[in-house]
Length: 289
Image 1 (cartoon, rainbow, N blue to C red):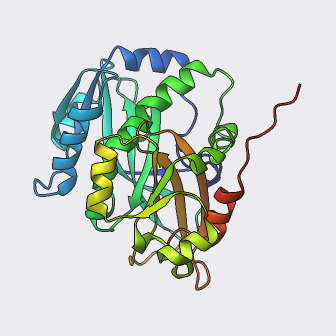
Image 2: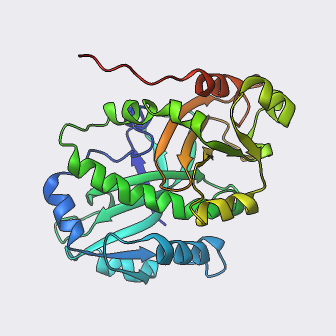
C-alpha cells in the first residue's frame, strides 16, 4: 500500500517482527482500545483483498475491526482511536541488493504523526518479495495474522524482550518440530531434498509433501501436530538477495525455526539440506541451575 524504509541491520536480527523498535506499553494499551482498520488494495481484483477478508473474519480476535480503502486510510490515520493493518512495500536502507518486500504491518494512528512512517509500529511480518505471484503467499494469511496477534501478547508479557533476543527464544523450540509432521511444498525445496527419498535421507522424522491448496486446508483447519514453512524468496523476480525461512505451527502459529541465506548457484531460493539437518539435530536447551 505504501513504501517504507527500515534499518537493514535491524531486519537481520529481528526479521519476524522488524519494526523500528519494540512497542512501548502505552502503545500496546492504546492499540487494545482501538478499532483496527484493515486497508484493502486499490485493485479490487487482487486475491489479497479476498483472502485478507476471509482471514480476518476467521482469525482476528484482539480488537474490533473494519475494512477500508486506501483513500479512507489517508484521512482516518490521524485518529488515535484507530489502528491499521496494511500490506506495505518495504526496503532496507543499507541493503546493497535493493530488494523490496511486502510486509503485513500493524500500526497506530494519531494526529501527532505527520508522515505515515512516523506512526508507531506494533508488529511487522514479512509476507513476500515484491512482485511475486500472490498465490505463493495469500493462503498463509490466517497464520500470519495469528502471529501478529500473538506477538502483541508476547511483548506485553515479556518486559525484557528486545529486537536481539526474540529470535533466539523462538529457535530454542526448534527441537519440537521433530514431534510434529512437517508439511512442505516441493518447489520451495533445494534440488538435493526435493523428493521424498532425498528428504527422508536427511530428515528422519514425520513429513509430507503437499500442494499449496492442501497446505491452505491444513492451516485454515488448524491441524494439530502440523508445522509448515513460510518462505520469503524472490521466486523468479529480478532481485536475488536473501531467502528467509520460518517454520510455523499450523494449530497455533507458534514459531520454531528461523534462518536465512544469500541466494547463489549453490544456495537456491528454498529450504536447504543444512536447514533440515539443523532441525533434525536440534535438542532442548539445558537450563542452568
